Length: 193
Image 1: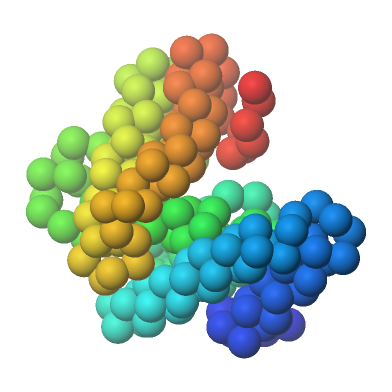
Image 2: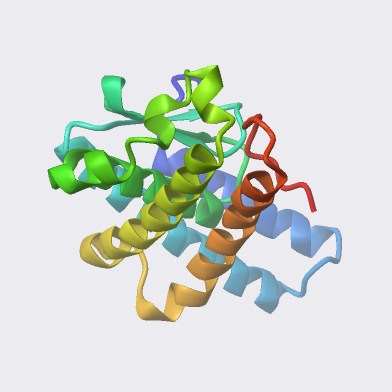
């Protein structure tokens, strides 16, 4: 991660190149397989840059943090995403958080539709209710859906990447489904398989 917590395409590309070299040197991949993985990673790094540029054009700051997962902070117009993940994971998390931005800033029907979701997460009494948990779950699904639309709009991903995006969506949504079904207060974004 760059020291200023912001995206630096050269730094991300250098990391991908080191991963390729290490995979070859340690015998994990042949040179041709490592190069194919590297090329795909470079494509996702470029897409990450393109998506961050779109965020900037919308007045949204993007920063990379040590915290797991991602977070849309409406009041600060900021998206924070994990610095430790691979570029595809970072890109999918970013797109999902942009989905929350789209929900928060679009038609007023969303304000009413999700008013019992993240909007009340500071209210300990309300956040323990089934209504809250299911509203959060519904909003999370919608944010992944909106994120995919943004991916196509900015050219970050193509229909050929749909399975990769959907795999990431399933990985993250599983945690919310388990959380909502358990009925416990929300704690964190971890995958508790």
